[in-house]
Image (tube, rainbow, N blue to C red; front, side, top):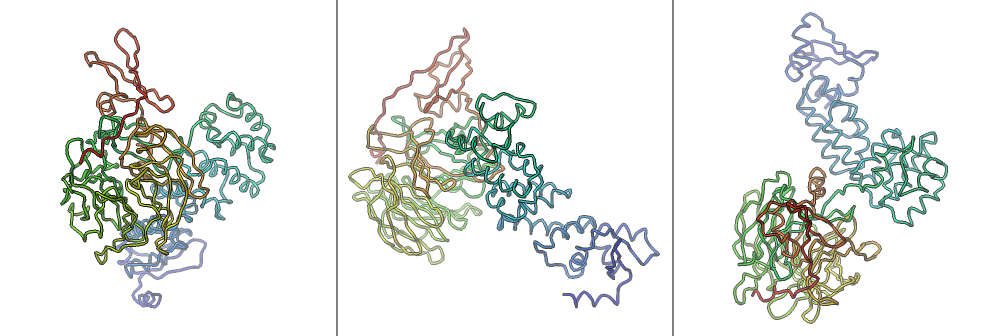
Amino acid sequence: MRARVNNFDCLCSDTVEFENCVVTCNVIRTELSEHSGYFKTLFKHHLNGRKVILPEFLSPGFQSVLDYIRNGETDISSMNVYDIVIAADYLLIARLKQDCAHFINNQLENDPSTALRLWIKFRQLFWPELGHRALLKVLANFQEASQSADFLSLSLEDLVTLLENDQLNIAEEYSLLDVIARWVAHNPKANVTELLLNLRLDSLSPEELHKLRNNPLVRTQPVYSQFLEMWPVAMPTQQISQLQINRMHSSRNPQEVLIVFGGWCSEEGPGAAVQVFNAKSNVWNVCPSSLSISQMPKRVYASAVLMGSRVFLIGGFDGTRVVKSTLCYDFSRDSGWVYKSYMYEKRYFVSATECNGVIYALGGHNGEAQGRLSSAEKYIAKDNQWQLIACMNKVRSDASAVSVDGRVYVIGGFDGRTYDDSTECYDPATDHWTILTRMSTARGGLSCVVHEGLIYAIGGNDGFRRLKSIEKYNPETNSWEYFQNMNKAKSNFSSVVIDNTIYNIGGWSDESEVGIMDQVERIDIKSKKISSVDSLHFPASATCVCILRDIDLVDKYVNCQPTMDHNVNNNLPARYRDRSNGDTRRNIRAIIRNRHVDFVYDVPQGRRRRPRRSRRRSREIANTLE
């Protein structure tokens, strides 16, 4: 490339030099004017001179600019992109600047370890979009960023900016103490208390709080130590403001949010409410009518698939009939639910998953006698079109589907007579299904998730009873092995993975109190520890779920207020609604108490009444729909 550049020297009409620098470049005036707004204006008024002197800071990136102007391209790398951006920005070469932005965005997406360096560099430029994007990547990958060499070189102000941010992604708040200690060891003269004040104390367990009080680094800070002794009733002081105390009481925003759609709600059948779970604060909310997502039609035994910012609800039962519809909601637009192309088959008890940007709907039941299906179809979102694919080797309803490494896996199910222990794999390249190793137990109404390339088959029904057991499958070895037992046997529930933790939501159990559950159980995949979290607002089985991971959208949905109007109130099961006759306008407010939501409304006389809350559980009647 250099040889090609040097061939222009004989045509060069001008020389570019740099202040306080011996570097010179021979240039062609017309060439620079064509591509650079800066040189176009300069040469328009600088007619006689043959020498142009530029600021010294443009020198490192100027040769890359010349390569780009003369050859239409230049080598952009993590080592030179900052210098090229400075030169392209100063010289008004918009296309080159956009190429650099594209490179940086790809680098942030594929190599988050570079985000910290890019944030430090690009926030100094007048390019807030890139600086903000780099900051979000640092916050989302803070554990990785804190291990880099660049981290120890952060200023105190930079580190405080990160630690105080609500979007800081950290699995355990207490682990920030180790991060602070490592930075302080490299910056011993820093104000340690200013860093410690950014710990969210309400997110610490009693054991962690005790360890914090006795930590050697903390004990060297008398102001903070005294404050900790008074926590959680500590008051503001000259050194610690009320704003900082309020922050300590709050939890950090999640990087992802769990969204539950519809489900079978006790004796009332299919529901339409949308429930949102914040795993950081362990709180469920029902989406208010201010978000059009709350106006979804009733659905049960459907499947939810997220692609980009859009969620697709595939098939299901609406309380009257089995449907073949595809419902779509765009989180980024909040413009309501839209009906997309219909499937070839009506399907409920359907399994669906996304693979390589394509949605696959597998098996299910069409609502007719002997209506369980082996057929499968795929949805091309850009064309809004369903296409039939090869049928599965077995008839399957009540199965579960996932995708791993470009292949679709469907696991378990029910054929109308027996529950299945088999697994099939679909290769989109060959349109062919392959039977794989069997599970140790037949499972219908199970739920499957993927974590680090392994498939987890959870619970279900073996034809005799609901199951507690979880098995995991390794696609590389084509083998199943036992993983762990849940606390409670269940089927027809939903499962997702957040932060190395499996969440099992609602479902139907035949243990203890038989019926539909509102309980949510989580399993730490690394330690296999099982615990319970805040329950659903109301018991529900046969829900479908998705995980929204777009940080720009998560805050909008995770912080939706529990206050509800009449429309959302009607989406809830009757026992959780306001039971007023509707003759008088009322102000409805949601009060969260333990596992339940009570709707309290104010009547004109100022008298408050609360609907009675039944504890009775009813039998699930989904199996009678056939």
